[in-house]
Length: 458
Image (cartoon, rainbow, N blue to C red; front, side, top):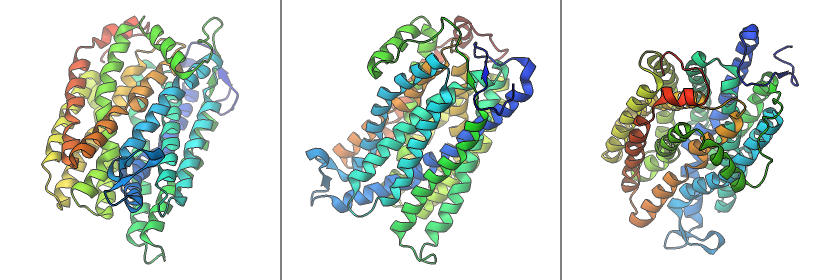
């Protein structure tokens, strides 16, 4: 059995064996490259360019009162991006249980990963055509790309318990995030060169932004080839096949019904749903806050996000080491305290002061990758064998698919008050409540209850 053979399947059971450690390492390296491929969407598209650009397109198409009217519904132009993100995640709720069940029933995650990844990459590349008053096209492409990202990440995350031993997962998960932030930083440097020097390249500012958006889709598609060549599908044990694929909501109910047999796993998911909703909203709305409320230019925003990417690599690896000493749960709780302080500081940031914005970006970078990586690795210990994709579909709903509430709250706060400061401070509740819920989860008992070996420190 060779690690690089596309159709090679491991025996059922989900946990890699020690006899093929070299093959496992090779598969892990391929797994890292999906983060390397898709993270440019999160950084260049969702975090930096699309929010301010789609907002400007919507404002150009708005009526004298500042409203656009998709499907006849009055929407403040400044809220369109947040609402579109929220809509994309609602769509992901419907898709992920279906795809997760199909992956567990057939054992073939890789073809489904390919479809989701290339759907998202194609929609992102098509953002090149977002110009003029085409705010509806932009909203549609965002909804498709963001939903596809959620589905693909669910399948990608479901590989973690299959390619890493229990005591490896914090490190493997952290390295995956580090790969992603490395690619995000590299592409942002190229974006900064193109955007800042667009006149010398004979491009308008709009053309430069659209090229940056489209290039993220191309990068995503090209580097997805590597994990698709190295990851392997697993055979499904007889009698352990999941429920037949039905409607999204029916399969979601079936998944949650099964998870009720593991209430401690469900308790962790609830905590993660709450605090990660805050994380995802900060990530997706930071550039809009910086440009619209603080009056910062696009070059400043790019530089700030580049700083986040660089420090997130170090932060993810450092928090992985902290987890080996203090345990993943305690390390995550520490990061959530830092997130709360970041939001409070963000509320008081003076407008037109890039230095303070950079300081805040540095703080975000130090906790962003680690809090996400350790949450993923901690959850991997709570998944019963043979249920990886199904359970990670629920996890990804918490990661992205149910993270519609934060953007919705953010958009509504702006729509009602006209102040992005009120919108940003409203997110504090997600981190406070999430921390309380996580602190109450007895993770060692949760791991044992899922039928998995308990690591020495978790």
